[in-house]
Image 1 (tube, rainbow, N blue to C red):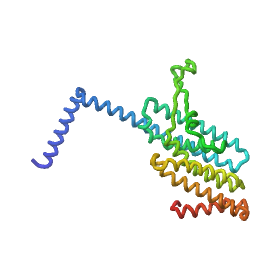
Image 2: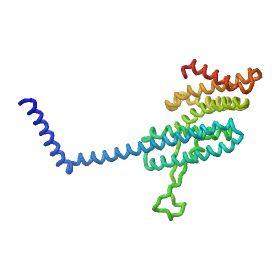
Image 3: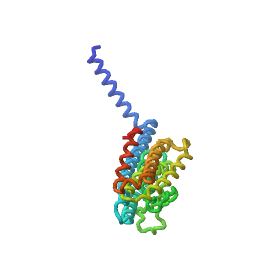
Length: 279
């Protein structure tokens, strides 16, 4: 038997095997069971991909809210900026309502990696807005209280509102901690922006607030999630930069004109980042 005849024989055997499998597929309980498994896995994968897309939208809109909130140091109409940011966050909450709808009847921890980046960014935006308004840290319970959604079905449009199903989304403690850790970077930027506009009181308030957050994270230590311990280094960097700004204001504030303070801090921050390998 030459090589060409061997290839033809193998091809005929493969086609015969496929024909036998085709006849056996309709009656094999094993094949039927695996078809069910295939459908379940495909459904779960599609849901995972939808959650990733929604999480990206949540991340983008939350970042826009944060960028908007940084304008409070530059314009006199602070309340108008805060109201606009609150309106944007209402839209973000509607996106989170879509996540809650996707997770209805599911174990959220099977899909947690798909939406956790967006939730962390939302927590960062909400805590930033709350701090600017109240100079305090919003609690996890307050955040979750805003994530209750009324789901109305088209088939039951004539039903009273009291009968509409309620969807809730619960931010996990780990996502809350990671969002608060990211908040410290925004507070550091708020500190530099405030100094640039001649506000020398805000840096000292931020310094005290960041110390309290750092103390809270220090109590957690290595017992918390792995991601929390990684972000603790960034938190310490932000605290160090704010404390450095406070030191400069206290010791050399009378020597440096107010309109030059922001440039001085930006230069010192760049040097600190270079020394720590953060360029």
